Length: 612
Image (cartoon, rainbow, N blue to C red):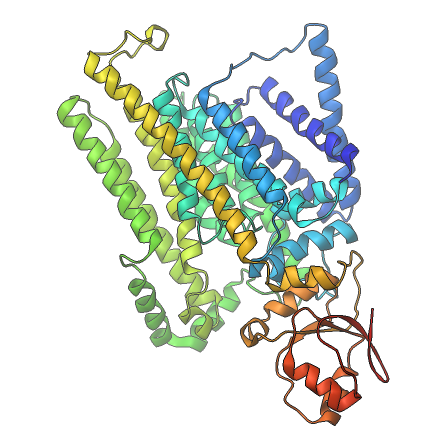
């Protein structure tokens, strides 16, 4: 680890955070806003072919802001108001550090890390540019690079390894979830803040198909959406901040993944309603007109970086996997026909059952909101909007399910779509978003139901009765315990996953060879005894990432004649055997009369294999 680079990145993040707060950004939104701001500028430099210069300029700019603000504060200028420490701050810092420590010692295992996400970061870190048409090591060339750019910035200055990438992605996640506390009217009320802490920890239960020990963005998408929606609510009476915040987050979300379009639609809808409702125009039609004009400008400017990316993809790559293309969708629809689309739809509906974790999450969200609405209505005589929130979330779930159906029907080959690859992972994303939105509505309703509405007057005596005071204290204690337990469960689950995956291909390759950090075209054969890992290209993708070559293959079947076997081996420059393969060892004896070829890294020579 390069400690000077780490110091520069930390100071840069603090510098951007402080400067944004000076401009009026909420302290609870400033961290994720600072990260989003850096991502956009890194993207601009990457698209202009100056990624490495961009990393230095963006990081240096943040360090410069930190120095300027430090000097100015020393002379009494531009000092920021101290928000104080709250219970949720200690929860976030303590358990965040514990989770970060576990992630730093975690390896990358998940398939999609090697098929795209980690490989993309490794390419940009060591090549210092976006991939081109001849860089076939990157196959999903239409995937936008937002999170990869954030990771590349740190990997370039700190050092590239799995642990660094996982911790940096976690920093982004933790900064995004911290934004929910901006929604609280009274942050000193432990019950309200711990409800949000419990929600954060509970989201990891529904994140089980994604988890934190990988670089996939299915958990990042809903959290960035939450931060965007929180900002819209917090800045609803501050037009400049509202428009700038929403523009930034729309741009970043669209650059995280193509499927973020649904989340952006939610943000755009919330923005339009907010602009019309809080417009200062005197007539209704003028409010609608002004709000719509501002909304249209935000959406167009926010989507501009994504349009730039699509143009780049179309100009750079003749064919690109998962590219957004109306022509490709029409061809898919014509090829598959309505019968196949109906079969996919029926298959998706069958997944909506009690055994589905995502469906259980939807039921849980509805149950909590409806029961809370009834309790507050009957026992506190308090009218809340929780029933409307539940209905709105259900419409959101239905809309997302329909968009997911469109993705399977139009973007995936029929056989792949019928397997519903990644279904639970995709559904978990929208459930996590619904969970956070429901929790935020819940704490706002609970806050409005407290006996004392004047926040400054709230203390130990501001309860309606001794019973409500005891109930409040007991509920707070229980929430604190469960919020800590659930977070510790996620930490322990990650540690268990690390131990369980000791014999996976990435860990096995690390035992026989050092990772390569220069892009090459070396022909490498990885011998693996597990047919499933070879057939689904997992072994090949891991080899591409680990040896940083676009010409690595995995193979399990060696049932062939000695002549065919020799011909097969001579096609490669190196052979990697991470795990003992009985057939391969026997064939080496028959074809080359070499014994003892069990595991290791070998160079291919005319007489067989020579250990490296």
